[in-house]
Image 1 (cartoon, rainbow, N blue to C red):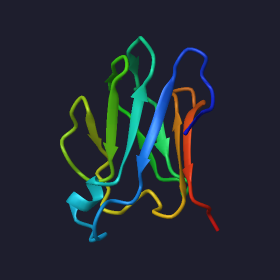
Image 2: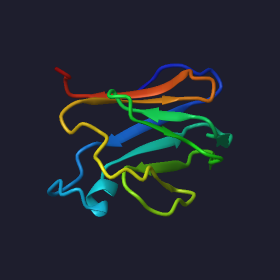
Image 3: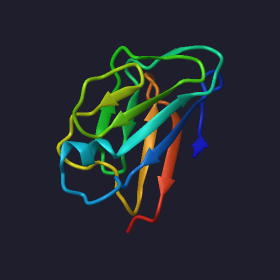
Length: 122
């Protein structure tokens, strides 16, 4: 995990790209694939207009979501009901590559805030 830019905002991303068990495309399996976004600042941050993107161009755009100071929000791949701590992309396909991928979090001005890369893409 590497924070790339942002002098005022500090956000960290963690990824579980390979959902436990068999990849059977069930909603349960899809939701076991996720990215966590943690606000490491003393202030809350509104994520409206921020995006989370993989190396293949799949993109999730945050709505009017506020992440409190030192709080974490988990963004699941599958469908579900959004809460303050869990958001759902509503995808019926896996997004994050099990062997290799990059998760990029950008703010509402399209500036890279954090990236997480794993494995080696071919």
